[in-house]
Amino acid sequence: MELKIEIEDYNYDLPEEKIAKFPLDKRDSSKILIYKDRLISETQFTNLPELIPDSSVMVFNSTKVVPARLIFRRDSGARIEIFCLEPYSPSEYIRSFASVGSCEWIVAIGNAKRWKDGELLFETHGVGEVVNIDLRVSMVKKREEDYIVQFRWNGGIPFSYLLELCGNIPIPPYLKRESQAVDLERYQTLYAKERGSVAAPTAGLHFSEKVLKELNFRGIGIEELTLHVGAGTFRPVKSKYITDHKMHSEPFTVSRKFLVNLLESIESERSIIAVGTTSIRVLESLYYVGRQISRSGEPGEIKQWEPYADSHIFIETNDVDVSAKNAIKEIIKWMDCHGMESYKGRTEIIIVPGYRFKIADTLITNFHQPQSTLLLLVSAFIGDSWKSVYKYAIDNNFRFLSYGDSSILFCNREKM
Image 1 (spheres, rainbow, N blue to C red):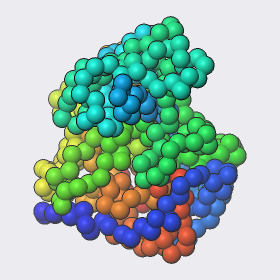
Image 2: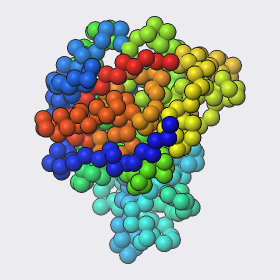
Image 3: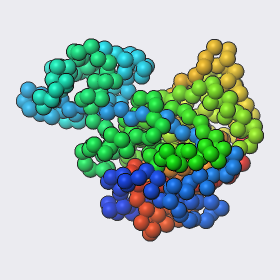
Image 4: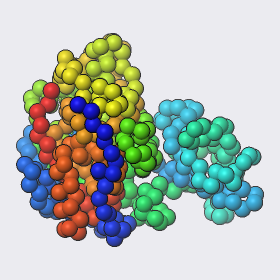
């Protein structure tokens, strides 16, 4: 069955006043919409633990947002913004953040036309320690959609500390404001650990210490993976058909312990709750990593259309020879053969209507932009009910997007 998915079918009217420009005073004071058994209700996020079924497992993304926006000036006075996307040399996040003196990054550049050549100097405003760092950037290469630049600095400090001193938190462009002091704390989850994201996994922003403690008290399993969120998460779908949209690639890491616990959860048929679209992207990508290993003996990057018969038929292939359980077993076995305690991969996976979820059966997520790939994911998860869910949210004064309110979507579909 061929489905031409038109992005216009995933549009809705989002008034500007519904977009939350700032976080609420308390993380867990946001509202949460509940979609279960095709019924919609609401409560306060602080009551989330009461909504979680006994023996469930919740999967969180432990990535940490870095202050990735740096402002430089040309001698002419032109303001050039460098937006760090991911490390290039060294390519590993840990090594790049530990670099002293120089490193190369893949970046987006604001006002790039004004920077034709030469070295740019960081705009210090004469502020203390920053003045002595003498941070400079030079162009290495222009690519199709981004750039490679080299940073050089003094002071013997690692790049991670340099970003803390000089960078700004990259809040979403649709907030239409500059980052402020409140964003340093609130555009970050309480459980953030692994530096690397340029956008927050916003579903996790609602979790307070109180909520996390209550989940633990109730015996809910807590598992963590890492996916570094790229700027592509804000990339709008400009094509008429989703087939013509290029999905961004993001790096992820899972530990062997995580996979063993995930396997046990699948085998014991525990409910698996993905906290955020980033978590569900990794969970579903892991299935295809395991399927790759079972078929060819080696894993690879999960390409955009891998789950589908081809890029024009949005019904998955009928290959059910690899169950979710066996896919995770394959990864563990492959890691053991190579003496690995963690698996690092990349995924371009796009989840659209017609996709069959393999691992997660419940999703906690915020309310997403019209005509976005994230809204397509929600539609894949709960079908056309997304329309009634979003209408309820609009009609009942829910706050939208990154700093907005939350939802918990119960799918309960049978896993493979």
